[in-house]
Length: 380
Image 1 (cartoon, rainbow, N blue to C red):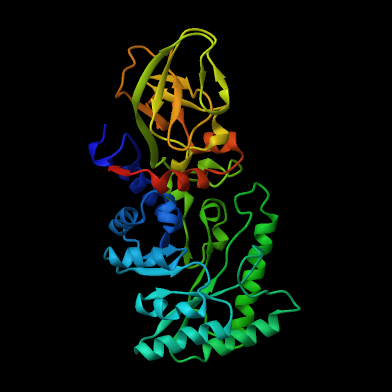
Image 2 (image 1 turned 90 degrees about the vertical axis):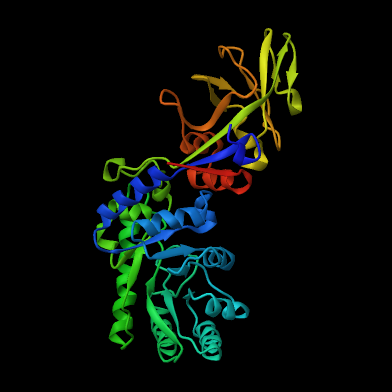
């Protein structure tokens, strides 16, 4: 039991595995810049601690999704470049300036607001120009009907005095699919917009497009900087990528201690809705972990945990703050025994992918959810 976790359920973050993943990603991308994507509290792993390991590996650029995430890093002492991956409304331009954040923009008026805030503070801001190559989220449209107007708008940004163009940014939407046709179309649109900008006299000194799947399988889009996200944390972007392209190890495990045990007779019901009724005399263990901690309620009917080397089924519906496990077949089970909700004991393994597939979601969501309320324990 980890007393420092303050509760008998916790996320265990293996920093040695994180270091292993970073080094293997570095070998994959060569001398290109690595942008460590540590948004959403580093996908639930803890952004400040993950930033430390990235820093130890020479990574000098981080990426986040909210201003508060950037502020958290700055207040923890981060001096690296921090890229804000989303757009920043004009009203928060002073925050971009005050915390030395690299914004992403796709509108000259927005860039002008940041420029004005920078001028007032006596600073210069470097920002990325976003182009929508097919994600449909943010960015200038580079199609024939819009490209001329987009280039003219970027030229207005290039003329600003206190906002300097750092580079060109876009995001891949299907790079994790087996069929790379659409990804190559996105690459072509990205290059088309870059060529149009440079032909118009706009200097674009730095290009970034590659996400985790692109790092693995699309070397032509590595450009100047790559943005590893989910692969930092030892999960593959999908089950369609070639795992032989990159060796990574899971960084997050989820564990809990048994807080209560009871012997129940046949016909005994457990949990909301009486979804579990014992068919024979059974032993039921209670864990202080539930769906508010990221353990998805729809997983209840499929869920198993690892107890003393045995895979044991969850009994009934997962509750908000607790869940119950049928440990009838677990030898010598007792209160305080460690239970692996996600992770491995060397013989049995439960991956984020297993939970995701059973609940119709993706491993990203599983890791992020577990990282929200559970305390984190860092191990090497």
